[in-house]
Length: 169
Image (tube, rainbow, N blue to C red; front, side, top):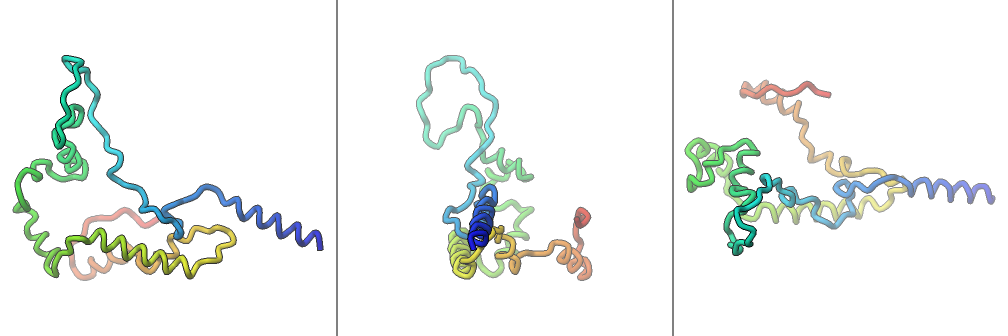
């Protein structure tokens, strides 16, 4: 009997040693995940002509990163000049019209965050027993995942011009 109790205790201790926490994959997490805009690269530091501190200008430019929005747009593959055009560029009007044909929700991020929080809460109730601490992130979202290669084939079969894709792994 002692050996059986000892074996159960050892198995429990080993199950508790599952390694590092993958917070994005943890269904019980309560934080919102990482903020992709929290860390922004800045330009090179430079020594100013005078060492007197300038007055802060709220909403003004930074001495090391004078155009952060333009830099971000360029880093994402866009044209930085578009941010000053005032409105939607002519090259994107057809795309915006097609995307917004059924209406546009102004608070879409908040709506999606609330729906995902409810989804996670429902999943948490159903997965209370996890003896080995397995990662359940992908299993939870498996019905919402898109098979990129199946969609690529579907589009090609419909005659829609598609870009090339890397080979399937």
